[in-house]
Length: 187
Image (cartoon, rainbow, N blue to C red):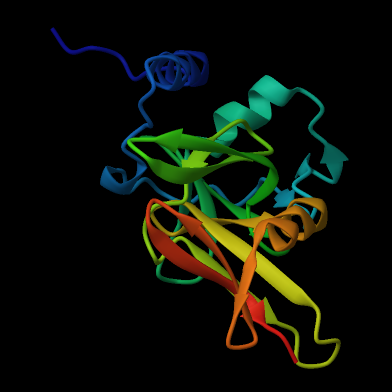
């Protein structure tokens, strides 16, 4: 006997179950058709919009963030096994809203929290990068949250990191997991 296709409610229930188990849905394994009649957006400050209206329910935004994917075509998508929705992202899909330092095995570790509650350990050299705007010379610091999805480090958090940093050869660094991460050069 064939099973009937899952409803949207069942799919979201499955995704929520994976999230509660600490797992993320296997969005890279799914290649559903594009649903083009939905307009979604994530603004630079991390707010999510559906059809130009803010999504106010934090749990829904958190749930959507677990099925977010950035594809080789340069677009972001919300992906389920049955459909994918293109989502406009003004800068990056996540915002880093806070951090804390911990000492583990005699190593200082920086842990960052996103606007949707993800915790990211700064542990590999590809995780942190800072772009400098050519016109304004303003820094835009980014942290890799997962795979190829990044978060913009909020200005407040970045300034706190600068306070934590040390200078060497006119460049600012922080150290996490015994690795040095540049916050940018001093000019």
